[in-house]
Amino acid sequence: MPQQVYTMPLDTVENMKTYYKNSLQSTPQGAVFRAKTPNAVITTYKSGKVLFQGKDPAAEAGKWADAASSTPKHRQKNNEGNAQFAPPEALFTSSHIGSDEAGTGDYFGPITVAAVYVRKDQIELLKELGVKDSKNLTDSTIKKIAGDLMKLELPYSLMILHNERYNQLQRKKWSQGKMKAMLHHHAIDNVLKDKKAETPDGILIDQFCEPGIYKRHIGTEQQQLHEKTYFMTKAESYSIAVAAASIIARTSFLNELDKLSAKTGATLPKGASGKVDQAAARVIKANGKNMLEKCAKTHFANTKKALARL
Image (cartoon, rainbow, N blue to C red; front, side, top):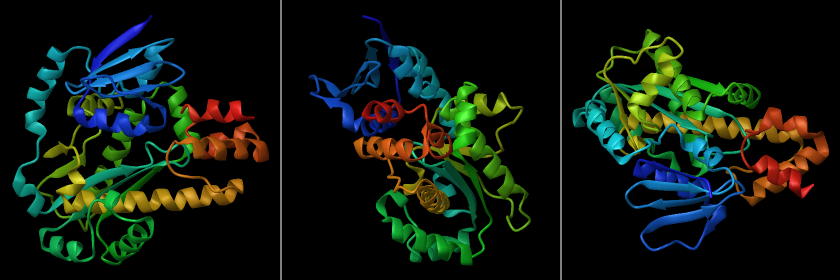
């Protein structure tokens, strides 16, 4: 049976568990989880080792290629090199730019990325407004806080990668990781050019891939990493600027999803669950398969599942 083995960051393993939540099987001893897809059986271990085996393990492993390293030795080398990208603790209480994204794991809707500049004298005010990790907020609260942030006229940039363009790039062999890297880079670049934004003490990106891979992604498009750029997983829990970016990006994603729902005549759910398969089938039945190009990330497995329902 064909198989591939990779070593993943532990936060990626947790993201994988969420992604495969509807495909989980009984977990072997010593494993974090096991899931089965049409392509492969995925088994993850506490060490970060991930085993893909089955009909087409490469196709499944490819979804996580940006975070993967082929051997534990290589992974250890990356970790040592990543130390220079860890943010100093003082950054969280200083004037800095934070960036975050939304919509990456959702079948319907675009990817949205926001970068926000927050002065150190604004940090307490943003906390009073309720700015924190958007994952701990309801959609209605997120939208309200985003409205309050707009009134403050914070220097920010919002990038939206609509589904048609997303699908075009994906067919050109762009990984989702490269798409996100370029969106983050351009959003940050826009904020740095804003005359209302003073020179920041640093830039913090909510880490979605290894810093070296991020640099490689933007380098393929002749771009360079900005000075004093740091990476951190779950950065929105520590940085008010990243938390604000998370709220703005999430609000934009929700608004775009509402627009697409109106366009298709169907309520488009978040995520990539069985409910999403049903919704996709309804969209195809009412509007034709081509409508998915305009409202969905068509390479997700949900497309095949929706077609099977029909």
